[in-house]
Image 1: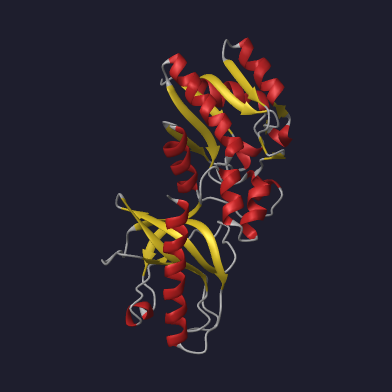
Image 2 (image 1 turned 135 degrees about the vertical axis):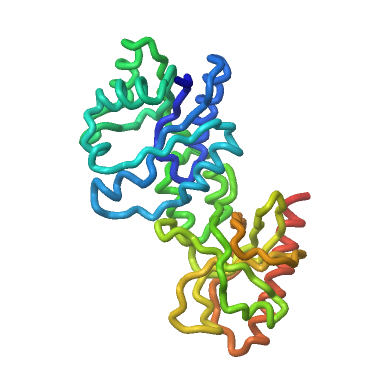
Length: 299
């Protein structure tokens, strides 16, 4: 069985507090000569425990993306959080799941980490039980930025207000949304502003409707983009929410491709324009704003 150092948590958003755990797991793995792994769940436990689905900051694939690319994690293990996991006694979670099944030789968690049936397992119990089995356990205190504790709830609130720049400070990276490009109305092409419609998982939080200065990554490329989030009130009524980047300085067919959209700044709210010409002029002005934003912030 592979030996692993395992960081524990849900890691929604993969913010700076999570980053401390991930860096520690990477450090311990290098010291022990084994893989740095994360054990997390395929859905937020609160969705089953409370029956209320919490909007997720990041999709499963984006959580994995940030953990691997920003923190050097080798493996992300997604376990199914169903009734069996919810009702698992905390001792069995440690001894059967972590130690026997996953081969943990060292674990890392936050001081507020809870696990097992009804959250009976604590970081202290994890540390004591691991010690009896000869397994190391690091328990880290919460991380603060400018005196403010970093939590997913804080980041979620900033994103819900559309404050991408403040959210990025606590995340340690720009917020992103990702998904496959799907067929849209193709209206943008007739305006000389071809956009890519991206299908976002329904459980993921959608920032406020509006237009964002963004970057889009696909196939090893990264381009600036003007990205609309909303339901396009100028051209349709009652349409579903779409994430729709106009990728600057790019032409090509992206249908079926996976795109990752990094949102840097909300430029304006969504507006219903009196004509398509007015919409076109505003989007081109937003493109100039986007270029100016990145010219200023990347020099």
